[in-house]
Length: 68
Image (cartoon, rainbow, N blue to C red):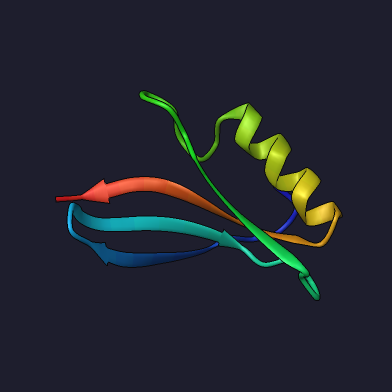
């Protein structure tokens, strides 16, 4: 991916969620996406969507699941 992600952890009622945050320069919007079962934040569709979003000035957060 074109921008390095900051990995943050967020406490939720179902455990701690790991989020890979890709900040766009001067973002005017943001989107949160997650993978399906068996996928990961490196899935080709999420990589393509992240790159497209960043190219359009959209910050992208990818959910990497949760730790229980």
